[in-house]
Amino acid sequence: MALRVGVIGVGYLGRHHARIYAGLDDADLVAVADGDAARADEMAGMYHCRAFERYADLLPLCDAVSIVTPTTTHYRVAMDCLAAGKDILIEKPITENLAEAKEIVDTADRKGLILQVGHLERYNPGIVAAADMIEQPWFIESERLSPFLGRGIDVDVTLDLMIHDIDIVIGLVRSRLMDIRAVGACVITEKIDVAKAWLEFENGCRALITASRLAPEKKRELKVFQKDSFISIDYQNQEVKRYFKTGTEIAFDLIKPESREPLKEELSDFVRCVRERRRPKVSGAEAMDALDVALRISALLNSSRV
Ligand code: NAD
Image (tube, rainbow, N blue to C red; front, side, top):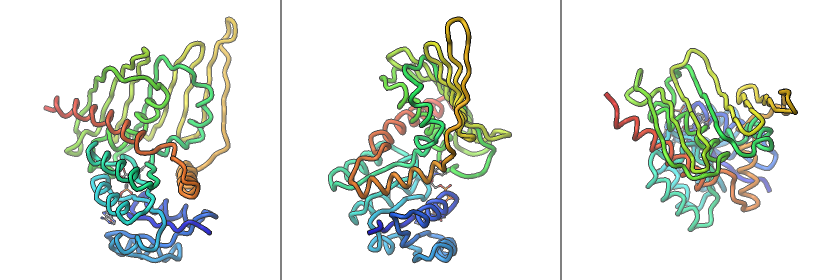
């Protein structure tokens, strides 16, 4: 039997969750909920499911839900879904603070419910293809730049954009974080809009992570430097370039994995994890680690605000 899924919040990203679930073989999109009733109705009309203004009314129809509401609402919505016994996928960042994140993680654990967090870059074919080439990074540099879209501005850019790369970097380095330095600024909004963070790990690896929501053009790139090779991952084009030493020469590979929609990969994996009662690859622990670092960067930046 197909898994009965619902989507709570069908704004910019939630409508893609609805579209993808509606097309999956092993899931049935049974309902969507949005505080904006017209949005919920529009999605329900498109995907032939029920629409609700209050998410509490959607829960009895579903086995599992995606929570795609603004970050500041994740805690309340997630706790209500868990109280109703539902498996949940919460969009990133899991919450805006660690205490709330921990309560969600502990509650899901105690109730034996599946909790996945939407760090979708883990499913980017470029990252998946590069994973086998990365052994012990010495230096990592990432850039995630976006023109100002007015979205995600309920939180600092560290929690909105940078957290994607924080999650990828700490997953690749797998060593204790010893020190963080950061610079950044509030420019257009009351929150940090542009930031650079320098991370130092116990094993000697260093990472420079840049995120901005005020760039002229979109860019999403991760460069990994390690002994005898340099790997550059372009998230947007889902492409990997590898430069590596062969004797005294430098060789070059361009790897173009089969193009896939990361969000579809992520939601398919969530459905599989729920059906097989398996721990997702980005569960509460990974999401809390990334949130912890993002919050420490935010705290550094906010303490030096002028
Ligand atoms: P959005 O503002 O476009 O959409 C949010 C929707 O939630 C709106 O339609 C709003 O009416 C609805 N909503 C708010 N409170 C609600 C409630 N209590 N009950 C029901 N509906 C409610 O926001 P967005 O850009 O889609 O972002 C949503 C979440 O997704 C955020 O946490 C954001 O960080 C995350 N996000 C993740 C990625 C990614 O790459 N994984 C990309 C974009 C956004």
